[in-house]
Length: 453
Image (cartoon, rainbow, N blue to C red):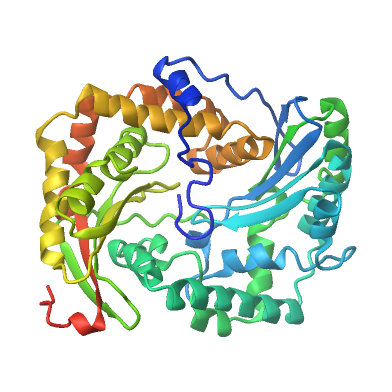
């Protein structure tokens, strides 16, 4: 999944002894039991009944993300994450804050490469009100010049804050921008200020009419509700919205296979310390190799006992931090590894050490103890991701859009627990090879004595 907004929103690795025991015992995680129907206008509806607390989570996910932005109009999907809160024919701006926060609830949204998701968490007796509000903004959103101009500046401000003022924000953009050559994933989600400034209201309305249709949306409700009553409300508020007659374009561009290593050196004005990144082409979220790559990510860089931390941070003391990410998406994603170096350390040395640690996975099977620890941490994260109504709702939205089937939420645990040492060696040897990567030296401007390669 994506790196702007919420990147793999559910897998926060917070290990507790109880959850660790749960994972080590390989006790099956109870499946999420849901009903699944499609309205006559094409909107998909998933309901999960759970009366353990008097609350409910409502998610509306749209199958549109950064990769779907029109050519030359990068940032439109992200822009609509903001415009959706600016009022409708029947409501004022900040209505969703009033409907949720004023009753002790919350609301938010995120945009990723492949989807945009809106959610509310409220006491269950407010379910009907929020269903009406979500249906209302799908049907009567106010997309006018004042709203467009104000939210465009907000998005540009986020770009400035996250990718100009942030010393390593540019590195995040380079990872996608340099690794992809043809696929629109290369543009990133945040948007390009110049392209947003040159866009017209007509451009924005066309994007909205194309992607914000019921047939391109999924509604997920999880929590304390009566399913018969909930379905009645859903049919009442969403069922009457017109299906829409604009064909929804899908990205068909296939990224060409990389056959030789690519190298980039970037000098930044406000970069305090050098960084070195390896960016490999990987697979989609639905791939049979996804679980093994997620375990490999954990082995490489999760926690102080991980391979990269032990070598580069603790033993060699060349890096102040290390990271690995299996950034898998609806279409083939990336696997990136990087290190931020300590002052005075050379990127060539860091590159050599990174390569040495990766090569170990290719030449020697990981130990059973190390593999079990990684699987335990990932299993714990998966268990934790089922603890709240909203996290289950988000998981269902993501599985439906990214993997094509909501039922994938119920196979994730068995897939993780089935990963073997041989699987780790195989995916490391198949994907983490020099001919399949882009190497990025991300350097302070004062370090121009480092040769460009």
